[in-house]
Image (cartoon, rainbow, N blue to C red; front, side, top):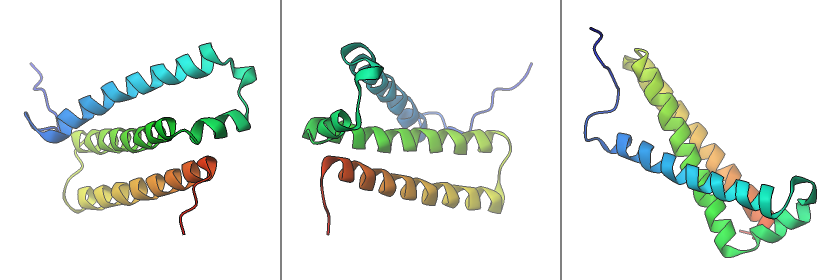
Length: 123
């Protein structure tokens, strides 16, 4: 019988956070579909409407949280999938730090974009 292997340690925090972020993403995506596909139909959505939504503190905060959560969930999933495929040693370290750097760049650029849409200027 095949042995089950997972890079997540039993009782580990990365495993728990992967599940928590997945649940959060399902809820936020449901909100997105409800708001942008049932309340407002796709042909009614405009840049100005999107910009107006981003000026609301609750919506802006939710989108920033969504950005950070989705980035963590995706990067953590990719990293653990690579470990499950046998990544180890110096390659594992290189991949880890590359993913961390890519995550930081994505989050910084995402926040800059959200700030531009919301009309927030940081000096």
